[in-house]
Length: 199
Image (cartoon, rainbow, N blue to C red):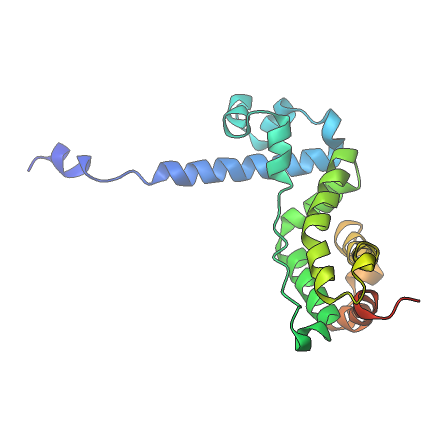
């Protein structure tokens, strides 16, 4: 067997890894640019420059700015099931702990919040994610189906308020809170919003 034969059967595994790395660089640059400039002012050319790649590569993977934006802010919150009787009574704590895990370990969620507070397109995207993913959770435990949207909105106000002050604005008192303190303060409020009788 000659040298060329021995190497020709070795599969190339570098291309997929390079593709993933390129996509990751594009999405990271896009989130930063959308958060800084807003949807309207952000350009494919500027995002490509930030990612240190040719603009044609952005177009190749995402076709246009709309496709890139959708990919950059897509996220599955992976919300826990709180429908069981035992979990229903502890839904506030379960959800607060879950969101703390998400905020602290998923930079996409923080980027989405930054985009959401700087431009309308980001706000609409965030509204859609919260509507599609939080409403079903509230529906599992809310005592009155007609109040689900209002209760989910109140729950969201607390969770996003914490995220904004702790992870985006990084206000020292919010950053300085220990995880156990956050859960102790916030979980009863979330629980009340979800399950308490209507005032």
